[in-house]
Length: 146
Image (cartoon, rainbow, N blue to C red; front, side, top):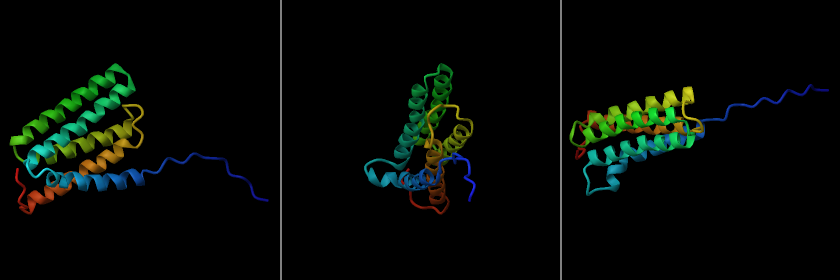
């Protein structure tokens, strides 16, 4: 006779969100190809601002005023970074994406905004993969029309 083990709720695997984050990060790095009439800096800056704005939506869904205030202030930093990246150095987009990935990691660890579940690890993967690919393109001198 075997003894039944108590039911233990295992943490939900993040393998899927991370894998999809890698796919979407690659797509984000290639996004300027979908908008050939626009400069790469503009496309990347718009995507960085959009990514930051998503967290304002999460903060609104959370419903706590202090969470909304903090997330709005953080999003503003990324929007300003994105605006500067339109005409500034391409490395601003890399820094913005890498910084947003760090913000995602912080969100995942602290759970500051309620209800984000798998989103922060997914978004961190998107941010870091896109930042790494853009940085690699810049380092090897790939002709990116900034």
